[in-house]
Length: 277
Image 1: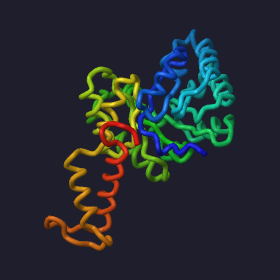
Image 2 (image 1 turned 90 degrees about the vertical axis):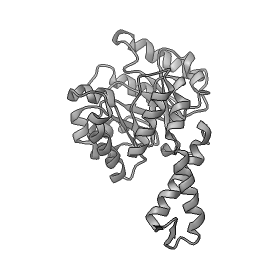
Image 3 (image 1 turned 180 degrees about the vertical axis):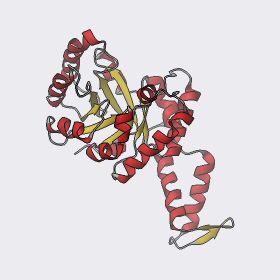
């Protein structure tokens, strides 16, 4: 069955030179694994990491979908990374520093038919082309740390609000799944991870990149609607009946309000109690 990329919300990074962590990631509660050949690997270690990736997956793949983050277009390792990924039994690749739709077209041409291509927008140039990148990729990802660095901004909510909102809009205009938000550097502070995931979801993001298994549970809790939202949505859907406009608690409920309530109920069913469904 073809991979439905929209089904996955939490993507957990694993360094390619640590194949022992791949199977552990498979039982972390994440929705998918990203084996990283890029930022997690030192320059002189990349060829060996590529070899470790192949050997690690040869021993069996985890139950979760597996993606490989290759090195970016124009780097010395990009071509070999793609050649390696194309020969593996994986679900897709993640292209960092995607800056044009042509980058995505070129990558897809070198991969087997049906292998997903996710694009990380993490530079000013990439952001300027995010509509086209969203069209050319299967799902768009916001590389918030590198983007903030590229534009000389703080890695904070206020500084990156415009970029986050625009990337959500790009994904919607392209009729693609909601984008995936960037990483939270805090590993052991569950409050920060949960709050970041909730903030991203409030803007329209459909998931989050994770760098440690300890982030999985709080991130999933953050993606779940709050108790008040769920109570409101259940009341609206219960009262809607045939879907005709009517008043609930003195407020008019018409089609858009009912549709939003149903979205919240679906999200609650998926992320309830911090566990995947």
